[in-house]
Image (cartoon, rainbow, N blue to C red; front, side):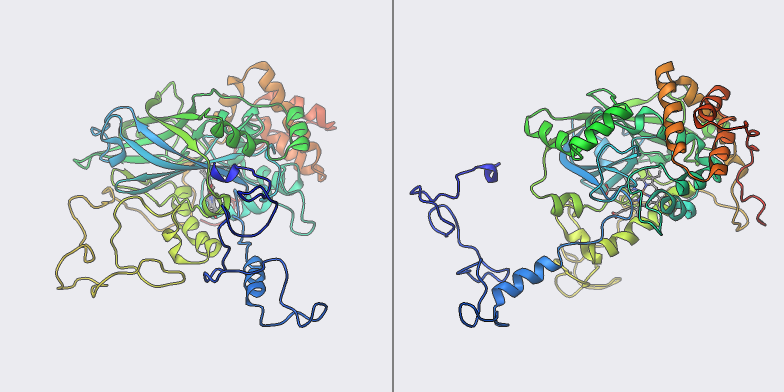
Length: 528
Ligand code: HEM
């Protein structure tokens, strides 16, 4: 807040100046050398050439030249804030995660909201999924819950993610569109990947144009595991419920807002926090056991399916309050590195093939995006609990091992700098029997791409259904290749006949296509 003070470039004496003195400290180079003139380069004669010797200018321009880093390959446009998470009651019966042991415990968090497909400069109110990523700085390491505002996903296996994202972003020849789903490639991919049908229902609903980040739900999407101190396992799905309520805008409003203020969502979050109107979300858990998973009509490892709250109610376990804007957007919001593999004792992965692939992808991409394996040394990524390990060196190493021990086993005396693994309290993967042939095949239990899509559609009010029909019709009307439109309508026929007919009519389809074969995938003709 200090830096918001405006004094019109005046020194304490009230005179206008750009010089150090009074309350303006001396500017230095990055090497700490005091700068005498930051606005005129060093020239040979007033009108002569600039000299190579000008270390002040060269350092300034050199640094500027390298300001840009690659934007995130997805979720490039985002906005973050700091806050805390408060646990409502001890959950020690189901998890030994430090964060959930004590009622009232507060854990610092950093949360970044984002759109998925648009580039960094794209408008906030695009019809898109929103990322909802939370980094909990727990006392036993950073736990990242890297979710979205929609509880399911387009695909079931991470190996399809590059295809999904290529199809959703700009087309490679023309470089547009950059923030819309309205183009052939995206709908071509989806119409050939029937597992995307359920997610498309959500993406064409009002959920995909939130009024602001403050009015969105969040979901961990995958099924995770909770492990208690005795090593007992329960499954869990994570939910965020906004205390502000759930609100969206309609397409016409979104277009106007995008035109008038493409920064609407980030401005909203910034202004709300500065005004002391701190947004809050409650964390919910759907906890269930193996028996429920075995009897549930869908596979709990399939990220295109949710577990209805009627079947497993959401238990509210705590709240997150975002109460501090960043000091610097780049240092914090751009350099934050969320990763699904950042997990802590008491929480574990399942074999969801989408999650398993994500666990590789984030760390891998962050090496490229942030430029060094040492990005965990950046304050926004560093844990706020003790860290002791033998990792060393690499670009920009800030804290290398101290003393002689940088390997184990070693026979040097134990101290702060010579840690050992801890069999009692260290992270232990939940024991699970794994058997089977090594195959490249989608499980039969991942089939049925339409039932939950239908459930979602019929759960909507008439007005909301109308919005969905309009959204499908509008987006598909931008698809130039007509067979793609027809193929999409053939999937909608498996969801709801009136929806499919409404869309077909709006698109002016000459003939209604046959319903899509409820096959698992158009690629199932490939050899197993
Ligand atoms: C980034 C969510 C699937 C790869 C993100 C972010 C979120 C997110 C919220 C932005 C993080 C931030 O704010 O910095 C999800 C969800 C998924 C999903 C909920 C499905 C349930 C995948 C899959 C892959 C993937 C399957 C790859 C196989 C990435 C990459 C980034 C990213 C590479 C950029 C990370 C960075 O540069 O820091 N994802 N994602 N995501 N996601 Fe995902």
